[in-house]
Image 1 (tube, rainbow, N blue to C red):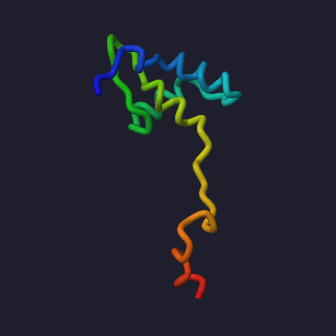
Image 2: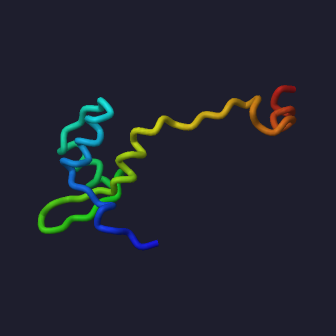
Length: 80
């Protein structure tokens, strides 16, 4: 699936998205994540850009599932 230019945002825009959710990080921190590979990034004209979706994914809480909601009998061997 081709990506559009709108999928890539500057580090300042990434910080603004995080700040809107009351999460405070400096642009240098987001840039460090991008350089280390924690966020997918590209560098154009000396500026680094990250994917908007990856930044927004940082805002989503981890999905948790209770064992009782899983298929019945799945953990019977563990329970004894």
